[in-house]
Length: 87
Image 1 (cartoon, rainbow, N blue to C red):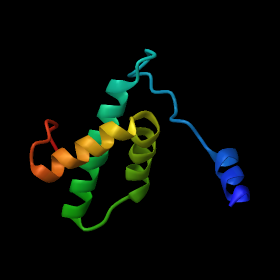
Image 2 (spheres, rainbow, N blue to C red; image 1 turned 30 degrees about the horizontal axis):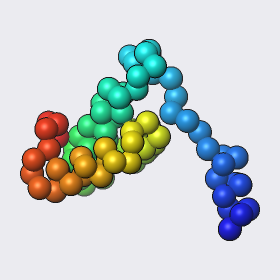
Image 3 (cartoon, rainbow, N blue to C red; image 1 turned 135 degrees about the horizontal axis):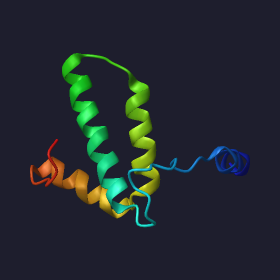
Image 4 (cartoon, rainbow, N blue to C red; image 1 turned 45 degrees about the horizontal axis):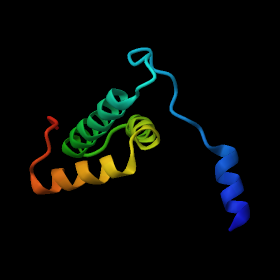
């Protein structure tokens, strides 16, 4: 268990720099990558396949930048059909 945690910490990579979002506040970057991930997921499920690595990139960025409470709220809103983003 301890070794597993140490390995995860050693291999952890933060979200890469995105020149579209140069400021310290990364909230918009989080929102943008969350929407991009779900757009890509929707398109790939409609196309029955596709490049999974693109989706993994967006998922990694939004998972590392977004607060967990935001993600759970956005996922709940999607499930209820009240999500404000255009997916």
